Length: 45
Length: 373
Image (cartoon, rainbow over all chains, first blue to last red; front, top):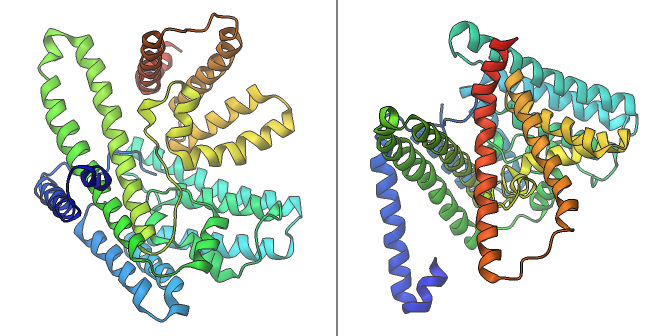
């Protein structure tokens, strides 16, 4: 993804976009983890 | 206990910090010590079994490396313990309505121990100390959900391990993507939104609804499992160890054989090396060893009749695919680009549905078979 961004943006811009992307993922994970059904559904191994 | 809990995340993060900040000679033992504490807290039974079998296997093999009777005894003890807990947890699930008493990670460390026993017998392992072996088995990132990584690669990393900021950042990114797969794609999109969307079809189009439910189950399974593997691989990288990949876009597989080369790679390669090849060399019949390997693969998931059926179903699929390959040579080759492309997508779609069908066979068809007999 970083390589893809670097083809269209300067390095600084790509860095900022990557940071924003990670931040977005962190926020989404935190917010959605609050839902009660989060858990490992695979067999008991 | 789930890897998603903040406590477990903090535990893993603290292990990574300790694995780099403590004096160098203590660093590998820090990870092993953290695993001991982790198991004693979450699954003392698992700690007891892992410690007992580790000592038993290492010291018995140390003096009898090429003695086949000792090797069989070691494999027998590890395999029997694994099978016993599998059967016990299944019967407990039937009687108590789902309360499993499975020692944490036994399915994975049993496979690692069997791998170690085989490789020691074949004399393919470099000289190593008992502490190296303990570090391998008590490796925190992979103790819970694999991958079933191999001892030679682990030993190489253990000896060459150096601080590398790139590894830390790549590992952290991998962990983040793992959590994203589980929480955003698996739990929220598939389990939540997609399931809610297909619930409207239940009355009006029951067949479509059943099909979409299977798709949902299958996709969720992939996101959950590959997400957990990503977290394990990411944390391993952060501690300076390269662990083998477990998934390689299995839904793009063009046939069932390719699917098994892309899905749960560490277990499939383990099954190929330690079940398929030994049985094939004993019987000289690849078809027999194929069925044995796939049935063992099924039993690894669950010690039940339905997973034997699941294994037979997959083995039949691979056998038919091999038979088709010899027939395919006689067919004219497809020159048209669009024809080739559509054939490629049709193959992936067919493989996807075939694999999804295995869960239908193991769940619904098995129940009908039981009722019939």
